[in-house]
Image (cartoon, rainbow, N blue to C red; front, top):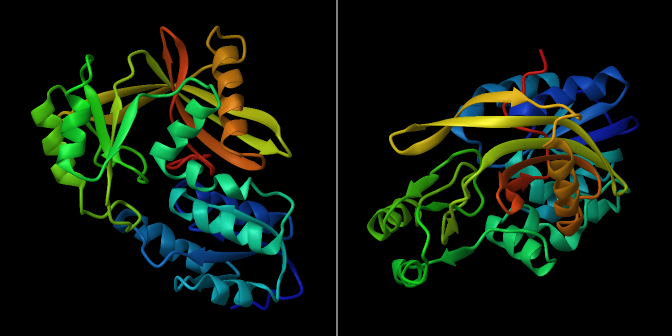
Length: 299
């Protein structure tokens, strides 16, 4: 393990999927990289975890005691703390706050950047287009909400997972309740227990991925993809992504809307990865991550 105390250090929390490419990028320009591992690693990240342990200058396994972690890291000259994947977003926020680092996101809105219910509710309060939804901890709560809706299908999914994990498109009350039963009490991709389940309206339109990076409330967009999905056993799975360009008709409305979303959710610095549906009423956020896109392959 390298001594990194006197070097300029970048801390990356859960540098998996797309985040693993940040490690050699920072090392190439002279930084030492400390990797902080969450105690629970999804099985399909195991290969990335072993790679990152070999590649990073130091690895710290987080024991869920934030004060201990802060004390361990405090001997270093830390320049930035970055979330490498979705499961690291809240811990990265907490470390940025603890060390008063300049390239941080708004700490008070940390939950809104991870909890998909709070995310949409925050947009609604800000007057930004959002999704009709309910957070249910019992099947009775969900059944009551479903009895008052007019439009089907609905989407049932965990509050804090990622990708298409346990996402179901349901065309009936019975199907939605069955999807609820399949999620409640289970663990999501990041080891958190699903004590509540999210049910949202199904957005019709064309789905896009909007990627970019923020620096002190200035927003730079790096990629815009049209996403195409296919259904496997009734559930959506990414199948194809088509790159769109700045002169395409969809570019301006999608990037302008995504900037409003970032501002409302306190994304001021660092990468963001948004999924946005372009509907008849305009762009509507599906969800956004305050981190690089997962599954990225720069080669």
